[in-house]
Length: 397
Image 1 (cartoon, helix red, strand yellow):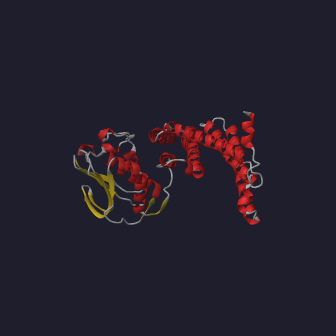
Image 2: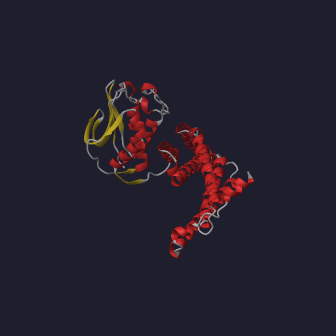
Image 3: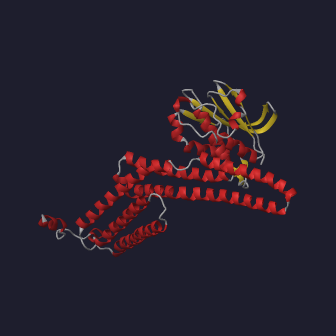
């Protein structure tokens, strides 16, 4: 047994890898210096991760960080061996290190996939919206008390003002913590998937590559949702990020983001003609279109679900003539007229999506209306139950 091991690691019958380069100095040292640079980076990253984990003992998913550090360290060791075998043909040792790297990388992959359900359990938009609404109610109550305090003395006024400032500060702190602590593990998941694809794409089958790509897309999508939550938590209390925006590009990005969602439901987004550029808060108007398109697909019982997004120079609405109007029209189940106002109330759901599809929080249209109100616009709808619904909105920013 011992002799077999000795024979396995015996390198007398091999030639150094440098022979492949004919010992040409420029090629040889190009490989040496390049591998050395990679080794320096790969050995530095695990120590940085270890330092970070030791400093943040409350950090979730510590095992994945440590496993990822081991994976990176072994990648660095494999590049050390690439330098070594240029002069010393110890290919068996190199193979053992590569095998260890492969095992740790596969373990990291499965651990990363295992953590996806936990990441999906992170706080939802509804929870943050509820906290935001409660704090806004508190702000309104404090504003009323502030007016009353003008009659009862400056001391009481000062106390109420401090309470209002504390309420706003707590909301900002909550939004920051939620955004920061949720995005950290998501970035880790995305980086893990990217490194695995970069170093082992040729060793994985097509399904494995697609799963890693999907993992990266999902983690990026969830990170974007966290950013949106931060926007919503400050909606109504911060200035709009006004900029010139192309709504056609917004719809294209939404279609790409919702590609799987649309395919699973045989849904199609149609833009009859190019829409004009507008001045608006792009992230928030993107959320308006995304919410309306999502609802148009979910609340639809047709075999082929069509969502038409467009722009009209003029619309003769029930409340009067409106100009420069955007619309989102579907061929879905429709809405009874008596519920036209109800659907914009927070967490108000009139019915569940068809075909037993996933349900939302009921807050989407509330956010849509609030965003449009911030843009000094108006939103309304027309619907034929069982046939179609069209949401119209204007922007006056």
